[in-house]
Length: 102
Image (cartoon, rainbow, N blue to C red):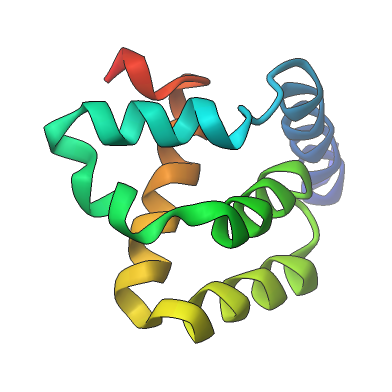
């Protein structure tokens, strides 16, 4: 099996994970961020427009061009701070499936 086959299998596993673990609704994420003092920086930068971009990124983990476009939208709304905090939200959701586990 060559490297391209491994990459294909990995991409399929990632896509299956996303199908099985839906991105939470805005209210769910927003409430978790608001209620946890450790996540207040993320809460300040999240918001509905960024939620939409984060959801698109999460649901399309293989589409580099789309991820870059969504990242630019977040950046244009709030700079590097917003981009960093929204990345953290996606990272925690992707890693745990739920921010409450942290």
